[in-house]
Length: 429
Image (tube, rainbow, N blue to C red; front, top):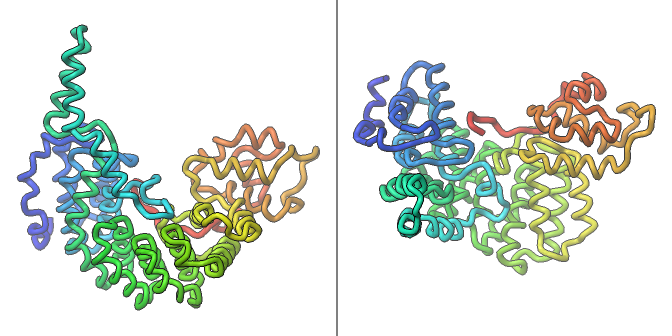
């Protein structure tokens, strides 16, 4: 390792890593992987990141070793090698909030509810339950299993993912004051990463909110500015409407989208603070973004702009102009970027192809624009499993039902195009 970074890892070997666990059981290999992040071998560093993303953060799960890695990762993010800092911030973000429903909601993260749920499955609560089960168990094998689980809980573990995830969240929360320096970093990517991370920590909003608003106002990089503005909208009280409303007139459509999205979240706190006229403008902006997506997007909702717009529209207060909302939803319907559960894809197929195609099947050019868009997005989708999950329905409708068949049907000129703007992808996401 480069000597100048040794000080960042002071205390790394003082942690009882062998007594901790991750997705692959013992965590005694974690310190070596963290050290590699500070080395000069780019290939080894990339492998170390991939390993950490799949071990201390594995498909959304956090483990007993996860929070112990956080302080060292935070030091690397602030002062480590330039090649490691952005990926380290991604890993810290994932250790705090996973890529599922905890971080992509349009209303901001419900930490109070999370803490209440985790308290019910804390080691202290579970220990008493296991001891009750042990006292009543008669079968020797059952007692042995219960005893093993009881002993594991007794040393401070919980089998519930909500509790284990919260330990990592709190570890990142403890490091946030030191990470705030990244808001002034020379690298726009790091400014973006800290702005995005701050969006999920309402406990620090008194400090972070004014700084996020300042970043949105003065930042030159459009993605960083939009990330900060939406973070402010997710953290702020209803009065933040006054700070965010002017951005509906911004020259950059990405900023207008961020402002509209933020204002709808704030309307959920206090509908009167936004008002019907302003809500109408937010729907107009979301419709425009759905019809004319940006070249660059933020990382909210995994970078899936149309799914994010759709979720935001469903969060509008009742009574918002239904015709305008329907128009915006129609613009989102055929756009498939990520769709991790396949539900949006199946709904789009059902709505856009309500009946089987005539025989012989029409050419791609004979389909409606929305139908063309859907099949084009599926033909160019980066995850073939999504098409496989809907293959039976596509076949029943008389449509191409493999990605290769879709690509042939749509045509090389169409699939060569990017199907949607994308956030930068990272290992483990």
